[in-house]
Amino acid sequence: MDRETLIQAITGLVNDDPGVQVAWLGGADATGRVDSRSDLDLMVAMTPDDRAVAFETFEKGLDRLVGIRHRHRFVEPHWTGFDQAIYLVRDLPDDLAIDLAVIPTDTPPERRLLETDRHGDPVVLVDRLGWFDRPTRSDVDRHAAGIDRRLARIRGLHPIFASIVRKAIDRGRDLEALEGYRTRMLAPLCDLMRIEHDPGRFDFAFRYLDRDLPADERALLERLAFVPDAEGLPGRLGDCEAEIERRLARLTAVRRVPVREAGDSAKPSDRR
Image (cartoon, rainbow, N blue to C red):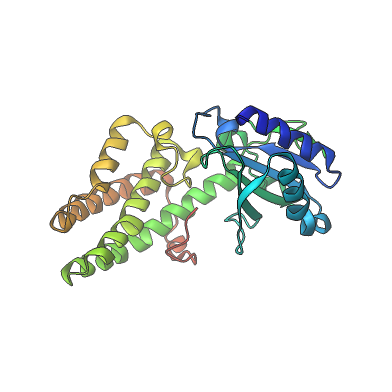
C-alpha cells in the first residue's frame, strides 16, 4: 500500500459512514507540499451526538481496511479544542501517520481551519453540509486584531522574559536558561518576523519557515537559535533582545498598538 491507496481507503470509509457530515485533508495535501515524509491531516465533522462514537467507528473501519498497528488518543483536546487521535497503519512507515481531528458540526466557520489564505485548499473527501460550496477566507478585522494582541503581549512581556533568561544564565542554570531563551526570546522574535513578512500566518510559530520567511531572515533566526554552548548563550541573548526591540518599535509605530492591550491575560506559555 502507498499513500494514494491509503487516501482512497479513507475516502471510502468516510463516505460510507452516515455520521460523517464533512471530511477533508489539510496540511501538506492542502498546501501542495506533499513529499515522501508527509503524514495525513484528516479533519472529520460530525454532530455533537455522533462525535462520542466517532473514534470507535473510524478505528474499526480503518483497522478492517488497512490495519492499525499503533494509536494514541489525546486526553486533552487539540489546541483548537477538537478531539484528536493519531494512528500508524500496517505496512506503511511511521511518517505516514493519520492525524485525525473530529470537529462538531456546530463549530463556527471562523474556527473550522478552512481559511484558504492560511491553510491552503483542502482536499474534500465528503461534504454533506455544503461547507465547501465557496472558499472561506480570513476575517480581515478579526485577524488584524489578533496581530495587535500578539504585538501588545510581546511588548508587555519582553522586558520580563529577557530578565528571566538572564537571571537563569547568571545563576548557572544552563538548561533552564536555554529553554527560556527559546520559548521566551526566539519564539517572540519568530512571531515578529512573521508579522512583518507573512502576517496571514503570524501565529504559525516555527512551522513552514522555509516558505514563509525570506532567506536572510531565516538565516538570522537560525544563527540565533543554534547556540554553540553555555558560554555562547549570553551573546545570543543580547543579539536576540536587540532584534526584538528594533522590530517591536517599528511594528508598534506602524500598527499603533494600544498600550492597554499589553496586559494580555494569556499565559506566557500559551502558543499556537
